[in-house]
Length: 194
Ligand code: 5GP
Image 1 (cartoon, protein in one colour):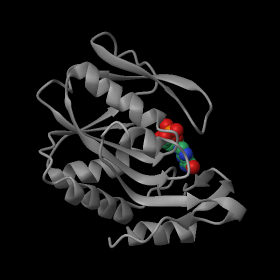
Image 2 (cartoon, protein in one colour):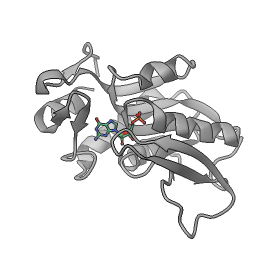
Image 3 (cartoon, protein in one colour):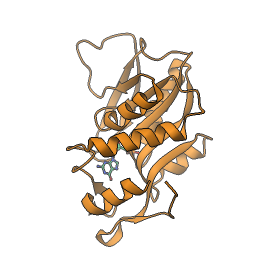
């Protein structure tokens, strides 16, 4: 997605060979115009999939998911990383090791909001080693819900997550796919037309 790649080039900061900081438009400050375009792009790519719900993980997956949900006309559910007093019992849970924080969180989703009638699109901000996406997919399995695929804003294609999930036969659509962050520079995989 051209607009997203331009934004990454302009405002992304390469922190190391495997971490990209995009606090200026996705992970801290949020660019609503870009998020709207991203949501619409996910909606276009998955419009034939019969999606009834979007599942993401707090907090940075929520903004792009909201616009995809708005365009597809479906609710957005976000998995919570911390137990809340109001979120007890009646939960699907799975363990997710965070790539950036190097800690393991138990994520949870209320059974009230996903069930076996749902066709669910999983969305997240980054795909690195795939742990967040796999945790969300595990929750869908517990719910006996159908998965329509995984939508990722920024995939780091040089890490293992993308192949791990695609090898399971799951459709992964990433809007920008990074080939390398070596030498402080962002290099993308081949151009896509969007
Ligand atoms: P994974 O679970 O695929 O290993 O990592 C994905 C999660 O880690 C995303 O939800 C995202 O929050 C975080 N993450 C992974 N790599 C990066 C990165 O390079 N930059 C930022 N800002 N977050 C990342």
